[in-house]
Length: 120
Image 1: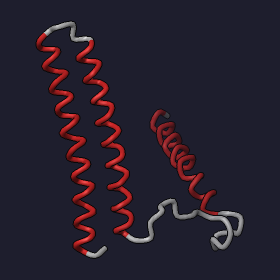
Image 2: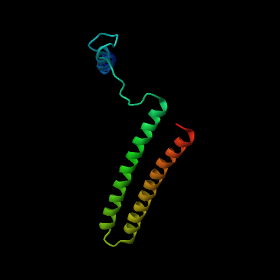
Image 3: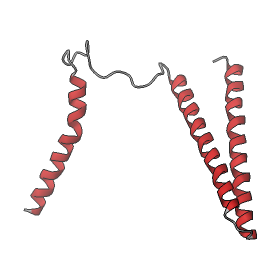
Image 4: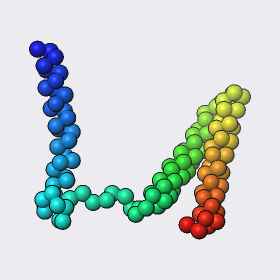
């Protein structure tokens, strides 16, 4: 009985997970996709545009993380209360965040240089 319940639960979950895909794929015009259907969620038409979009997205996320880490190091420094090990930790955090931000900015420029050299 317990094994049967597991099988029924698994089949029900699979059906519920696949149902939105089937409904979205059908669209208003039937299965042919002439009207309605699933549109391309990516803004790129080629693989190189897709990779470029992913790299741009990762650079933006990395820059946000670097700014958050710089702010975090400021909080660590403010709340160190003069303890040398806490001040050292705050300085290391700030150094690593600035180095990471510098690498991101240089990497973004490097990608532009490589694209210009390859003519893409």
